[in-house]
Length: 73
Image (cartoon, rainbow, N blue to C red; front, top):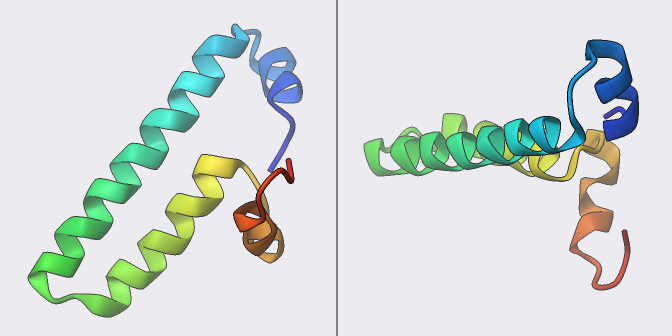
């Protein structure tokens, strides 16, 4: 929910490292979501799926729907 540059400055790490961690966290959340779906844990799958979208785009819950609009950054 913070700009990548703010995180980079706060922790003194390269931008690519922060973006890589964000991407990996999104992928992991996606895998956990699929795992929950296959086990029939639909409530947990829904929660993790929402979290995955937030992590992937780095936005607050209220703004996630805007990320589905083409050409909106």
